[in-house]
Length: 308
Image (cartoon, rainbow, N blue to C red):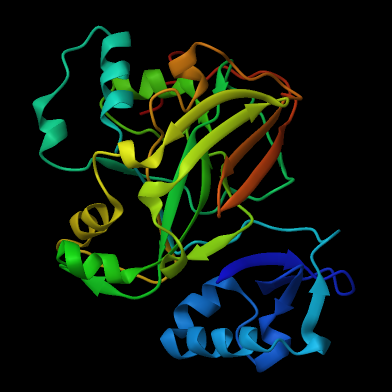
């Protein structure tokens, strides 16, 4: 299934839909299923099977033409959001830029950081330029979304908990991220202002993530192109690792991290206010965002404001 959160043209409310040819099926209207993506994930396999049954013969009264519909992020309110550091070449390039030795510990476990699940943007949304950054960057990634709860999962078990995949643009304030890294913490303000998810969440039974190619365009020009099979850490292993002594839940999202060359920092090319950034992945669709213009600039430096 190709699932999306679209805006109902009449009520202007977000609704859960499934692609049915050139139309979208409103799953809530069609069969009393949850009207939100998170609710649908939490409803479990019985609801998913009912959605597939409805798609086999979509009720006309619950269908809308795809053309002209506005979309939100596929999952506007993830239960949790974590992003991994899964591409070796990207990790090594970063260490080389910083003139640091590449840590052997990178090969021991899939490092990740906890993102902000409340600042979520979708296709067509303007991404706010944080007032405190001078170097805003995109990151071309894929994310997996969990459909079932689990704990202490083996790699094989973790694979079965993955519901589907979507495009993920992990926007980054690189100058602030650099300072946070120097302190051995974060990233926080360098990342937490914007995360964009693709318009489609495609179920795992229809996607072989290792066969996917990723592209990033800025103002129509191809900046980045990579292959997901170059990922060192696969999603089942990532999910298994996170689940050790920790429960994972339906609606949890895990980003892959970007491939080498999949962000402006790798290329030493920087997006600017007003630019249009598009990420494209076959099967998963195309995620398009315009970069906003900065407000009054703020410098995050509190040296003169220390408080006991």
